[in-house]
Length: 302
Image 1 (cartoon, helix red, strand yellow):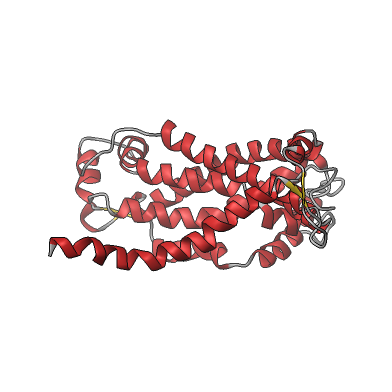
Image 2: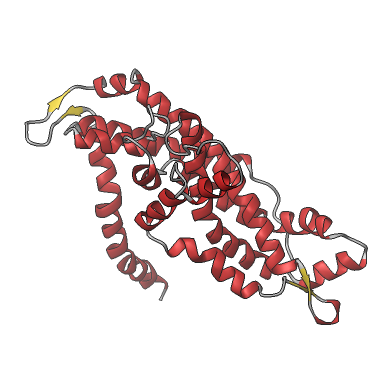
């Protein structure tokens, strides 16, 4: 039986590894190779070496996009994880069950569905929704309320340079937080109730339960969430392309690397688009490796 184990395992691995290599790894190889060429799609490829990378590093839009990614990389994970942990804690530990046992707030099952709802909405639907929310006149949801409350003039959330990026980050947080509420709720549900009850018997408040019990026991889940949100911060293309003004505007205030890839492809500059794609891939890999290394800590067993 031992002699037949390796062929048996290899027989199961051949198909998935082949499919993964062809549909995932091979496109990466092609993209890296294309980044060393100048190609307009209908002409013969011309080898240019590192010329595309040099042009990218001297492009103002590239550095604008990197700056925006840095802002999103800080604000998106922090805000999403903070909101998600707070809501998940309320849904699992924030209330009192029968006999004084630890339980979530009343109606927690319904709230989980409400929080998760943005995850099932398509990006164009979210774009139409928040285009109405941010509309810079009295018909906009926010401006309509503010103008009736006495504001002199409407706020241009998506047309003012200093407000456009924070407005888009708010949409990203709104879209993402529901998934992580469910993720953290599942993690908290796996923590034995006896731990919370013992802490409460020792006089721990809800705040102490959150910081001294929940956070340490959920650390691995939070670490994973941070990596996923960081990768989302390096993407953000869909929301930006749907909501941003003038293709990453105003005046490049909301451009991201994914949008620059799209812009180059629209101009039939496929070598430059591949170069931006390689940069985006490398940044995502470096971030994931750095985050996993930085947040590594001792695991708690329970």
